[in-house]
Image (tube, rainbow, N blue to C red; front, side, top):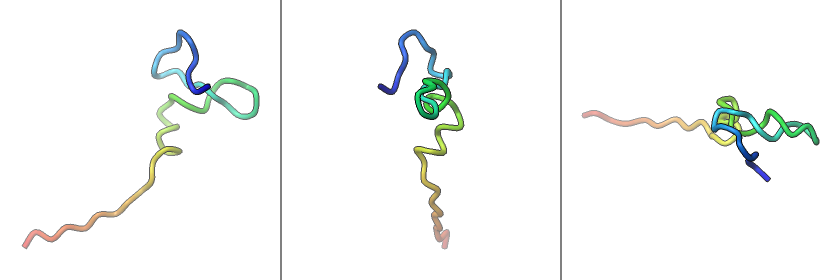
Length: 44
């Protein structure tokens, strides 16, 4: 159950334990679903 009914895309939903609020759908949640990667290119 990842999304709550009636909530906007900016409203966090999920939470720690059974709190039901604050884990997903927030800006900070992007870091949990992202992986930092370094890319080097040669412009020769």
